[in-house]
Length: 174
Ligand SMILES: Nc1ncnc2c1ncn2[C@@H]1O[C@H](COP(=O)(O)OP(=O)(O)O)[C@@H](O)[C@H]1O
Ligand SMILES: O=C(O)C1=C[C@@H](OP(=O)(O)O)[C@@H](O)[C@H](O)C1
Ligand SMILES: [Mg+2]
Image (cartoon, rainbow, N blue to C red; front, side):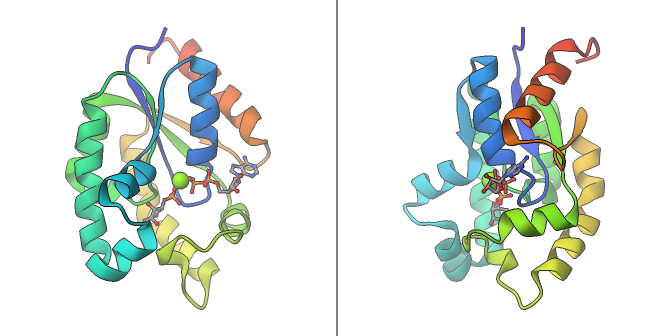
C-alpha cells in the first residue's frame, strides 16, 4: 500500500510521462504531469514559454507547480527532465515523495525525443551532443534524489511501469 506521492525523474525521453500514466493506473492512484499542469496554468505551451520568458521563466513556473503537486493527495507525478536543477525542487522531492529515476541510453533518448519537436532544449544542430551534455550535468542530481533507479532501455512502457510498481510495492525499505 503506497501512501506517498511517486515522482518520476530522468532525462527527456526516459518515458516519465508515458510510464507515469501507466504506473498510476496499475497503482490505482491519480496521475499528474508537471509539464501539462504548467501549460494549463499558463495557457501556453512549453516552446512559447521558453521563447517569451526564457528558461528561467519556465523554471520559476515549474517550481511553483511542483510545490503545489507536493502538497496534494498521493499521486503519481511525471516531472520535466530539468526539475532537479533547482536545489529547492530537490528538497521538495525528497521530502514529499518516493522518487524513481528512469534511465535510458543516449541512443534511446535520442530516438524517443526525435519524434516530437516540443522540447526547446533539443532544438539545436546536434541533439545527440546536447543530450550527452544534459545527462552528464544532471545524472548526479537525479541520483541525489532517487529512492530507486530503473533502466527502461529493454522494455516497453507497460513492462517498465510493472517493474517500477513491483519495486515500489516490494521494497521493504520504501
Ligand atoms: N520504454 C519505452 N520503450 C519505447 N518507447 C518509449 C518508452 N518509454 C517512452 N517511450 C516513447 O518515447 C517517447 C517519449 O516518452 P515520454 O514519456 O514523453 O518521455 P519523457 O516524459 O521522459 O520525456 C514517447 O513517444 C513514448 O511513447
Ligand atoms: O529536460 C528539460 O529541461 C525539459 C524537459 C521537458 O520535459 P520531459 O522530460 O518530459 O521531456 C520539459 O519540461 C521542458 O522541455 C524542459
Ligand atoms: Mg514528459
